[in-house]
Length: 135
Image (cartoon, rainbow, N blue to C red; front, top):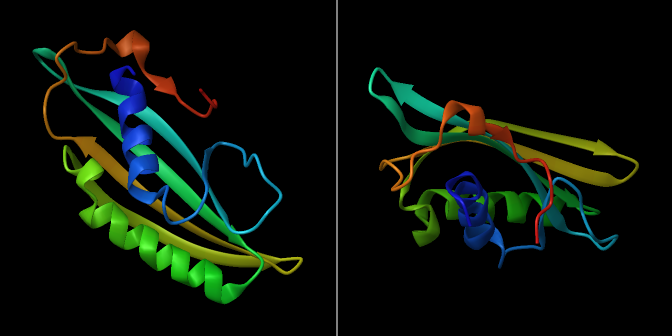
């Protein structure tokens, strides 16, 4: 796993036991589930690349309001306390909920910043949008 994937993998480890979790597109038709997207960028100083920052958005999709609300609460708590999130600073940004066709979507966003400099710094050319599913 390269550094660009580490934040998404930490998110999956933090919330994967709460509901099935997928990057970019759900691989199921069964509710509830979580779909997340992230955009990873390199944080640089005058000395060059220093860390990674991710803008991560997760949507809980459920056919009941109560399940969506319970899962959203559990995900929010996990993001702030999970051991897998410890190398990172997690900053909650937004929360929104919507219902369309009897399907509830609760969407949360965070800014997640790596607290330590990677062993192998990423160059600005390697900044990427990781909205691709990887095995």
